[in-house]
Image (cartoon, rainbow over all chains, first blue to last red; front, side, top):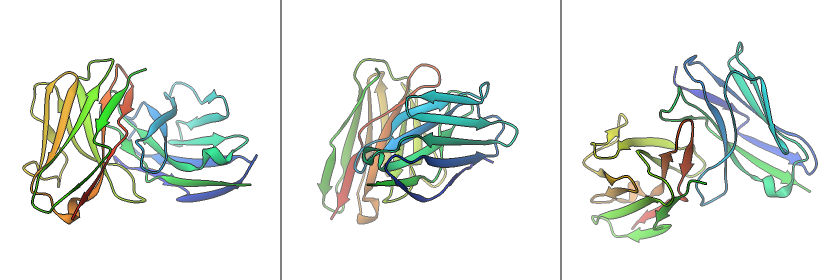
Length: 111
Length: 114
């Protein structure tokens, strides 16, 4: 029940395209859903996060879509750029507790 | 913003020796720190949660006598890998809880045991 399932495992998108990564969870106590970006040899960095009281949150080229009834949330990267090539992790937590991470998606943006 | 400084960024040690990794919160007080381990191309695996002044809470399967965590102050938490062996080689990352619904991560430490 603590798992967060993430897909796809890897994703190749052409420059300028839309990158979409999906996550699903079971624990209905989760109420904070962040997305992290990690470059090789670095710690994760917060990209964007959402609470379940809204269905969408947008920050620049990054958008989280949240479907509470389906217990799913997704990250959309618009106008994907080579600099977006990284590993992305979704996560969830039931309040100010430990994060449960998804398995990660390796995103590659090609010219 | 809240910054966690993690050192060293990489370390190579001989099998059987101990290695200490430090994480400092630079501009805030970190009441709760989390320590993760990450193998290549895998997700972050939580090892333990520590609260300032208390004993760390270890996740199932993590040897608390091997991975010693100290969180003696609100700005410093350390992870000591004791009697390290090649299988302990990994990327170790600390994270601090910042306010409500906030987490900031250190830059990670690449440990190689030879």
